[in-house]
Length: 333
Image 1 (cartoon, one colour):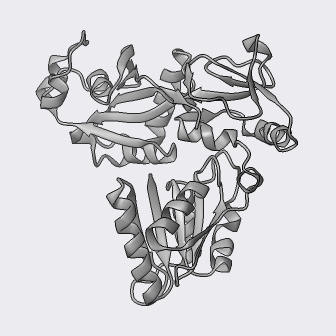
Image 2: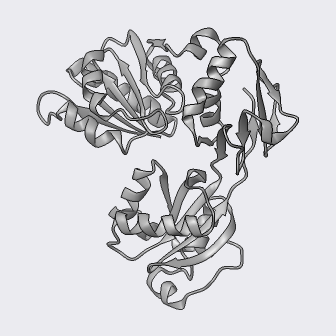
């Protein structure tokens, strides 16, 4: 999770750095900006830049500054990042935006726990202790294809009604109150898997790993167009992609980094020795090996990232793509 933090006073900056250290210890990527003094970042410009590329924004200061900073950029619960605000005295940590899909509610609890604050969460399902399907989906590695349907599902559960579900993947554990398994999967109100029935809340397993090989200096726009074509030609839903994988020579490739950031995906890279150690039947290129040290970047990287190849090396506009899929285990919680 990429978390961008801004503070507005010395004491706020101290708190921001403590929070950053706690989150980084849990494996998160955190950057901290100063909204005051030497090296001051304009909070509106900072928010504009981070809103489309960070998974979460944390404001250490007044809620009003937070709201004014993000207001021009709010678009949809499906795409907005999580936004959390904590006062510089670490008294209250507020989930401001994208509480469920973006994960702001959970992040507010984590930050509050790290610094002794009281988490403030106002979403109805959380206040009432009702199962929140969108929060659960994100926690399980599922993408929400049509978030506009969530309101109807949550309203039914809040009113004490029942909602039917169907899943192409097994789900462990006790089914939450209000959910019942549909006798006919294509009559379900919640559908987990591919090709959902019309009108159902569609939850897509994020199991895809997109391996990419490209020349140095390839632009984000060029990668975006080629990737879109690769996915479309192979009937792959873009929402099913969980990771981008490549060789370590591309770890700082601006176009590839921008492409991953635009989709809020992590770019993982591997050295040639690791790629060469992957087992499987890979399309080989002596030319590529002479430059990179491995005969196949895209498919080997997709396997190294933890998946099994389902679409092998494919050349699109001078770039190479491959897709692997990893297993996913679901559990009610």
